[in-house]
Image 1 (tube, one colour):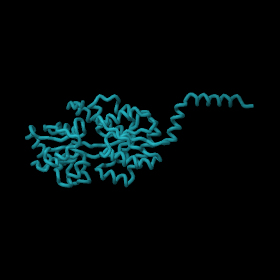
Image 2 (tube, one colour):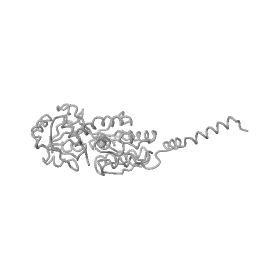
Image 3 (cartoon, helix red, strand yellow):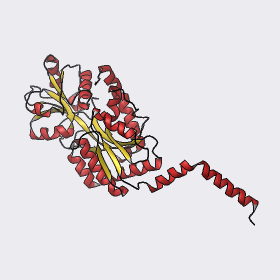
Image 4 (cartoon, helix red, strand yellow):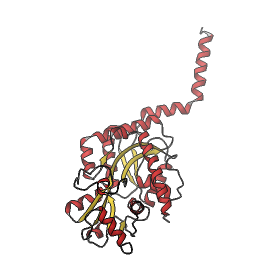
Amino acid sequence: MSKPGCCLWNLAVTLTIAAVPGALSNEAAAQSYPSRPITMIVPFPAGGPTDAIGRIVAEAMRTRLGQPVIIENAPGGAGRVAAARAVRAAPDGYTLSLGNTGTHVFNGAIHNLPFDLQRDFAPVAAMTMQPMIIDGRNSLPAKDLRELIAWLKANADKATRATAGPGSGSHVAGVFFQRETGTRYQFVPYTESGMRDLIAGRIDMMIDPAANSVPQVRAGTIKAFAIAAKKRLWAVPEIPTVEEAGLPGFHMAAWHALWVPKGTPQDVVAKLNAAVVDSLADQAVRSRLADLGQDIYPRDEQTPEALGALQEAEIEKWWPIIKAAGIKVE
């Protein structure tokens, strides 16, 4: 005959289990995660730099997680289509949102989004960044950044500057440059970067990610006036920083990171973060990303908390600049 205390204890356990089925199922799901392929939503078409970064990291994550990480390209709306697709996904770790400065910072100030970039996404890891480079056509008379600024002020009625379209990173960089230098010029939007017209001398200047600029600087087809960062770029060490060139504080980088829908279990986020961190420590991965002009964030800046802080700081910096400039895209 069983003891009354034992029966009461069994009853209490049964009632406790019945009261928290969701908690137990979430815990079990987290322990068995991942048990099927994972989708990484990329906000731009196949073949571009963001897509290339995503594929390199996804391939490395597969070996760490034991499941394929499948790329789903969802271009459109400067990244809004992909973000909306990710927000609607189940918060179970099987849908990742690959984004960058434009998709997960700038878009919040430029567009009326049906979601919140911070509250509706949970950060996983910051991955790569590349500084912007201030470039000019070879035939410009300016020999350095100070002379470029003087030339732009003297030619405000005719100076031209290429962008990748309204609201793009290169557009925001151009607005920031005008604000910091007191210069004025005409923005010329392109579906891509406008680099071809800069090489041909049809455009005066641009501020573009290092991956686009470095090959042309090395080939001698354009001038580079400064790196928009605190340190020189290893790929082109001859280009001075903005501090060295006379425009301190003009820092701008294009960075890439991973998020998941808000509500994804913390254990799952931790597994994804560990897979990213381990992948980025792989020398073959680092070499492939370096070939794309990417710097990898230091290990202590690859945590979910560090990505959350980075996104917050970037929003605080760029939203006022974007809103003050009245940048809107229909």
